[in-house]
Structure formats: structure tokens, C-alpha cells
Length: 144
Image 1 (tube, rainbow, N blue to C red):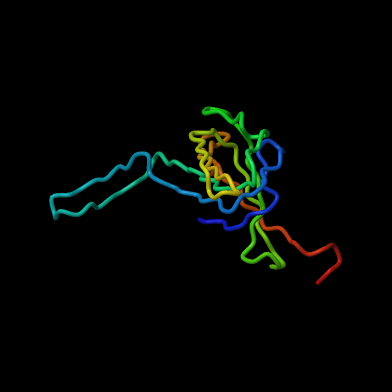
Image 2 (cartoon, helix red, strand yellow):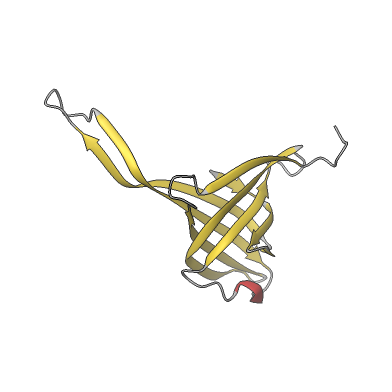
């Protein structure tokens, strides 16, 4: 899933400005397949271990001291809102407990810095999906 121009992005409740996109990648960490003697194709497959990775891309006009100290291995709560368009009446609130696996900074242009933060989402019990996605209304209370 790709969330373009998410709003209200926070890491441990601290606002993370300038986020352009958050990509969610889900990959099999291990795959079990079983074959029979009837042919070359698997007759059973399972994915007992799964990895959910988040890639946060942002641009800021100057280096950001608030997140200069993000370190590999930090366990942080990520939360954000995303909608199909900025004026859409409904949005999604996405949250996850994450462990930072990469922080890359670069010069995007003469006036902007770019940063890519990569994290692995962790489950509370190993069984629940580490990513929570909830619908929310973006309309003011009482509006239709």
C-alpha cells in the first residue's frame, strides 16, 4: 500500500513534518511449499513468517533537529492519517509500533533536504497484524 501526502504524521506523538509518502511493504520471511509426485508445481504453500516494512519519505526546508537523533533500533510508535484526496470526506488512521532499521538523509534541492526512514512494524503478540488501519471521518461534527 502506498499512502501519498499523509497528514498528522507522528513518531512517539512528536509531529514529523514534510512527509510526502509512506509505503507499506509486506514480504514473506519464510515460505513453506509442498509437492507431490503428480507434477512439478506445489500443491501446498504457507507463509508462517511475515515482515511488514514501512518506508517514510519526507522533504524539509532545513535539517530537522527533532529527528536528527533517530537511531537504528529505536522502537517508536508511528501514526498518520491518509485520504484519497485532501478534501475527501473519509480518511484512514494508520498506526504501528515500529523499530527503525534505516535513516538516510540527502540534499533534495538547493532549498530542501530529503530523508528516508525505514522501519519494521512489530506485532504486540506475534499473531495480530502489526499495522492498525481504522476509518475516520474528516468532516466536522454534525456536517454531512
